[in-house]
Length: 427
Image 1 (spheres, rainbow, N blue to C red):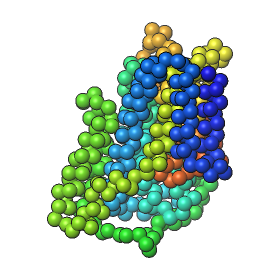
Image 2 (image 1 turned 120 degrees about the vertical axis):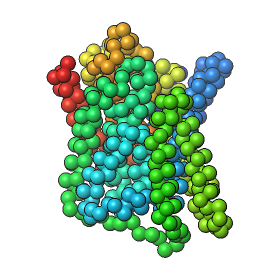
Image 3 (image 1 turned 60 degrees about the horizontal axis):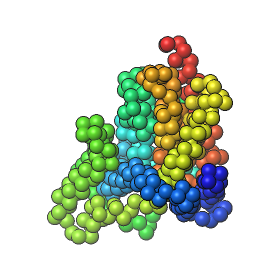
């Protein structure tokens, strides 16, 4: 059964990567792959009750991520409908792409540390749609945003799901992980940014033009500011909501979504129906990219089979026996996280090594947080941020490999080298 599952996963992965030559939507490939993997697993295991239980278990975790994604995307659409992003775009005066890229990179990096890499990517990629008129420029910026968001998310306990897992599991503490990873994470972002800025040179920013057939609704400064700051405030408060209530992040997003909906209805209660329909949250729900959400579901369900069949943990144990060196193993795990989801990889690693053997804030756990958090940037489907950007901008897998992967790998290696040297000097 195991070889068949691996072959099906590789074929599904190849179909996603070759979406454009095959002319088959990546969401279809992901769902077909997930369906085949679970069918083979169910038929081969012979224990339908056990398989159904594992599927339900995977579904709970997947649904939380999907609801969070849908909620965050809807909030962004509401802000966009009220021209809320003009609060930022009106303050960006630079006319050079390289200068804009530095600004976007640092804003993404620190915003990701406060929010999380997925939400930040959705917000920043949506913002670039408002700023940049050339699709090629937007794709480059989306790639840099993915790198910066994953780098920013790695050094705080709430910025990336894998760092959060290690934090909740007791492998790292909040203050130590921030002290230990902020410099390597910055290097991870700055190196690709410096290379890209040099490539862009003095190329000018080509602003986005409003299409003639696009219906434009003007909003007051009060409406734009209210929805922008309320929407951003809701996203910023989600980690605090999680810390205080111990409820999953998606519950905070859904709670905030209800608040935003109610405020929108109150603000527009006296307006004519056509304008009200255009600006309220009900309209925003119809504008979110459901194909991106469906693709995300397929990927998560496919990887869940590899987790339940212990394929990932077997790979981790093989690395431990074959390689031996801790730093090399963790770097390899980070590279593998570019191919499959980093959550089960980190979960498998947490099961392999005990806290008695490797106490909290030891080299293994901090370096694991860095590598698992940033290694996913190397491929577009290696992280939640990448998958979100792929759906929002319709980024081609092969294009990302050609244009962004080498930059992400360069930043990954540079940041890892800095962390290893830093750890040796300070410990």
